[in-house]
Image (cartoon, rainbow, N blue to C red):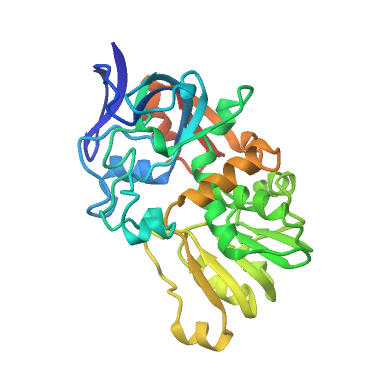
Length: 333
């Protein structure tokens, strides 16, 4: 008999017994090693996630790592026993968007592990084998649980297309921003500035490849590339102000309330190219996994807390205390 954290509806969380599920055709069962908690999981519990992007009751958990323990028919026998991570978007793989690689924009509609499908806050997870990315046998599965947010930042950095010698700024010194910094650092920028109001993040930013650190109020301009990874009010406008004319901006964050929206006239006069990221398509997952296995991406220093599965509600509460210096928080079955 397994266990799973279930959110029945806004404010209703419990740990329940979960009957083992047989994998269907093309599916596998993964024994979850570690599962991450992010802001979107807090939105699910609070009931503030946008309509259509959650289906109650739900087992959360879209960031995870684990080991394949059972195979359904039509799957590769060599997957059994392998360490894996997996894409969350249950794309159809057949529509024109999927065929051109935009798997997060599948025309079949939004369907994602941990939001509309059972997620990894459980002992076991049933998932389509085609969404798996196999990791080396000696992989640190605790660190690998951060490959989902890393893949989202890989999507951003692929769009940013940093080349050696460019000046780059990352707005946000949290988990997403520092994962982006690591990926960008591998491209050889001449300058890599991390912008965050918390001075306590400076040392970790430096460890992640940043050459400089400052608060938003002291942020300079003239950058070739600006990646916004904070999702706070005003950070999109800040990205525009920090970019040089003709520069490139990638927006990844979603502010709950935007007090300083981007003005179209500012975009036009700055002649910037603006990209946006919603999740991680398959090519971004491949990029993140390769960087991780090559040692260019090290998520482990970003993990500050871990809790047992039964302590999921306490872990979620921890992220709501601004006085607690919490980075990435993990659950382990």
